[in-house]
Image (cartoon, rainbow, N blue to C red):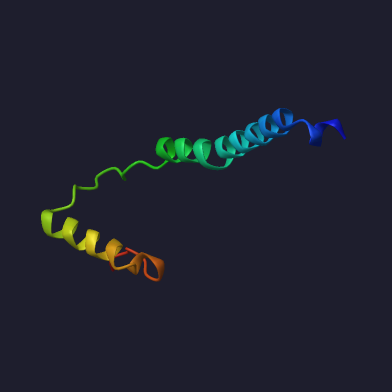
Length: 71
């Protein structure tokens, strides 16, 4: 049980485990998403009115219950 008595070993292993999990759960998936998800070909940039509507949509939390699909 020397491992639990030595605070330097305990702290360094906890820090290493935290960094490992951060890389594999947060950083690597985010980098992969940036590579994979690109705008659709042929899509046009949002107009100013559409951009304002999107920011209101996000600000009001509509994204939690509704999609952004336009029919």
